[in-house]
Image (cartoon, rainbow, N blue to C red; front, side):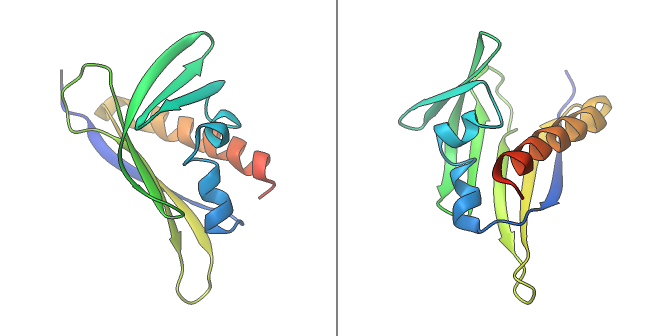
Length: 127
């Protein structure tokens, strides 16, 4: 198995950092656009899609700024996925930066997945 490659995608979003964070830093927020249902028990989040579930551990969290997850699928690699909010100092424009990892031949597919998911998020929050 080849090593996964890290990639980042930036999405401009017209929302306050505090409001935006509620949609990826909480189980109820993630349930509105990312998965069919999301539950958490401490730092373990359970994501449910079409009856299957995946668990992820919160590795790092800074409210209204970022949250980093690692899938608990048994793979012992350094990959994670992260949602990070950046605010431009001058224009005050808000961007959501998504960091993820994928096999080299799956990066474009993964980017399309995130573009579709973030489109759903924007639709959900009306941004």
